[in-house]
Length: 461
Ligand code: FCB
Image (cartoon, rainbow, N blue to C red; front, top):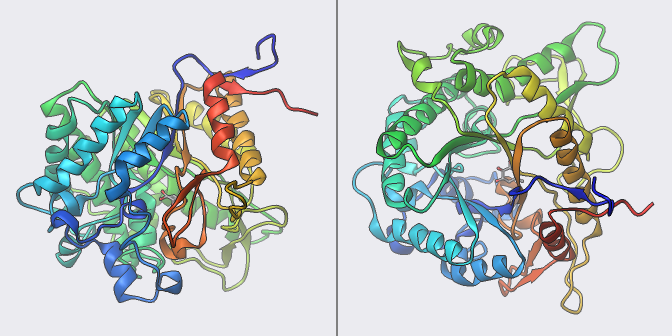
């Protein structure tokens, strides 16, 4: 806090927004892009609300220069985006598809021209369908293919991109993708999901090693959706506590421990024996534990688990007589509770649990609310309140000594929200899905001021 009452962030704090390839690009058949597992999920299943697809989405692929210009007008200093693997290698292996790679090269140039720092994620869930047909993440070979793909992108962009992430939310790519049908590839096979966990970890390590072999300068990291979780209510038999332990192991520790400590948590290893076991081979743990330059944390809310006879959850295999639920009270359009204090607590716990924790970026945080455009304006006070509360939590964590270097709001603009289709609007920019017209919401202008003053105004009350 300074004399003027402003909650200032450290000098150089990086302010941005985030998106991902399949959620915004559209242009799924353009310039040689191959199909991904999300094209298949949208077109070949009924697992996406109202049959929505990413075919057109918000057509960012064709509107990129205008979108970057808009970012600049909104005062954004950084932009986290992901590269679509099927644009780089349409079938997941083999030579580079140059037009696909050129798109990201132009994007990076456009960002730099506007003084916007690019932060690149290599994998935000759009696995080439051809690799899924060969077994997907449950197949060990996919980890090696990923390292090849990382090398191709890195060779082209390492001279201009300093912030690199291998994976976005590997728990979603493994457990949601292979054990719970809501995410592509929509399989319900806990044995496959268990194998996917290890191979995604391995792919991360192999990719970081491959990229560092080319140039050790750019900063290497990974983005994990860490989740604080709580037992709520009567739990005499300990079913909810056991559910939380299993969920915490799969959601949080099964990534952090191998990546930061070079070992799997013992309880996870034991739990997963019932599902074929983690397919660890000699040398894998060393390969996974590459030193990281930064850690990305995606945070939306805390989760809550209560005992319920017969209850279970596919995404946490082995969880029994317990369920996830949303407690009473205010929540967003996703049905997610609003728990900003959890973000500060999570940061502090992370710092206290991992001695060599690298600097942290909040790589996603935001909320879905549907507010209309009226007379050219979109008033979204609930989003402003949500972002303000979570930024105060980030500030509190920094005040506690946690090394947080930046914050990426999710998302720059409304987009395809996976199994929810276009029904959930996370953007600080509204998109009219008929005309694709972009209209910055009040929150975008509010965020611009936060960025300009590098801080939050004192609370009014
Ligand atoms: C995260 C995803 C992102 C977006 C937000 C709402 O889990 O990384 O793509 O869907 O949730």
